[in-house]
Image 1: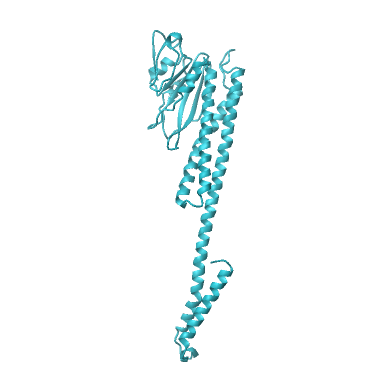
Image 2: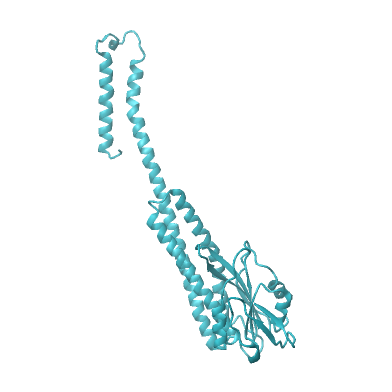
Length: 333
């Protein structure tokens, strides 16, 4: 999305808007300045043109920080006098089922909501075109538009958790048939993704709660989040709370699958050890008998027997059959 400043200043801009190829249907410039400005990886000029107020130095610096794969931000909403600054994270699921987390920075004033989407390296930008279009169609105020964004984030978290549940159900159905290496890799991947999602889901829930507790608000008598918008935020908070509970449940289910798999591996190892023990025990007595008669010491009565060789074989066979019968009775083999 590209925005340019035309015949105005950042305090009272008149913006000429050009839609991206996928098309954010913003309000026509003649009809007025859009109330929700959505930027994708903007430069300094675009940010300065879109923000209608002077920003704190740390906020301005945050808006210019590029996205990184190894640095998921902590979602939050903060009040800064005449504007509210927020860092949000929206999860997306690609065609292969992988979860990608996209940072969205927000600046909300009484007149405008500005969102700055950060695209992770090598990933496509997340699409919120329908969300922006709905806000413009209903002429939603910035506080309501911010609710729509957080509600969309909550819905996407629920979709991600549904994907986790599907993967765990698949594991439960196949843990006894899949190779152990495949099961361990699947468990490791899902566990890692659950931890990554939890790292951003919990603070997202806390950010929505901060609005309900009136800890995020503008200075002055006019409210960015009046009572009706707070009620909507309560719905978004309930979704995020439900997502947190579902994520905890998914983690517990995954732990159950992991424990079952480990118990199964241990049981298989015990079966192998039991069979090896049976083999060693079956060979023990024949080895003893052969060693006993292999001494060839003078004075041994068996040395003079005509059928001593066959006698030793009879003892070996009899003891072996007796051991096998005993092990079979004990169901060890």
